[in-house]
Length: 415
Image (tube, rainbow, N blue to C red; front, side, top):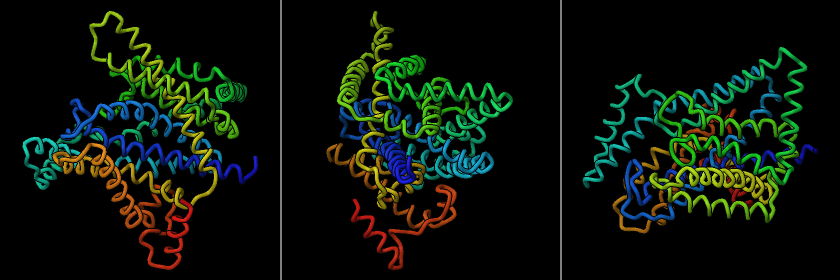
């Protein structure tokens, strides 16, 4: 493999990771347009069953995709910088944002929920919402570090720690370590090249899904006690990415775009959507069989979407692009900060007489736009940017010098 090929590969994988995080923003923005009550902060006057389909499909793969890419880059960083530097980077870039972010964002999210409840009575008081939100901190330590979208950082820390623990135990026996590495490499090679790979991947995933509290992936945000089925699935994707980086060329095999894979995705997605209607029909004599079929089709949809997504980005973004790089750099911050903005905007839009698709587009675009402006002005060139991205970088949107203006032109021209 040439250095150029590896660089391009990392460029498009950064774009994949950014896509997974940005999709999460749209996912949360869509939750107020669901036509049934799901316990979200607010329910819009305009809803659609199409939103349920989008939520079902997008939730099946966005975080799995993120954890696979996280495993890939974690292996790269670990072996490039060494264990000491790797541990430091995990603490600075994951643990610190998780803890500090929770104390800042949790009250703002609670305030959004409070305003959402008030909106049902036709009266929204921002000051009162903020008082309720920040007042919720008085309940600590009850509920500390849970109840936000930052749960994925906790699980990333947890899974990474488990991997390092297992790796440290392997050091006591060189023979055992080599045997495990050889087995892992052979397994990932087979899973990346075999026509039966999705079957082998979907079956154990479906078994784990069967133990979820709901049909599909649970969101493990209510407790620091590890959610075992979710940990197994996210850990499995992380492990796949980790071992995949040992032979980076295999990612091309795993993500190859074929008609057969698109057919599998379409069929599995259709089956998942149809079978999901039976979730509430607990009295159905075939309920257990239907749930098992749902879990299997959901698993096929999950793995094919992950592979196809990587393949599509490799196909269309397999070269350096300044605009894509900028968005990739910003995506971590965008996802960290987005949820309070989304909820507040959902409350503001809830009673407006516009079609749900227009409001969803506006909420998503405004959230990303506001977060992006904050990133360029307050994060990218500051210590916050160094914490999140590893180093400070020059502003682009708010650059006052000619070099910054040229960067904007260059980034725009490559879109």
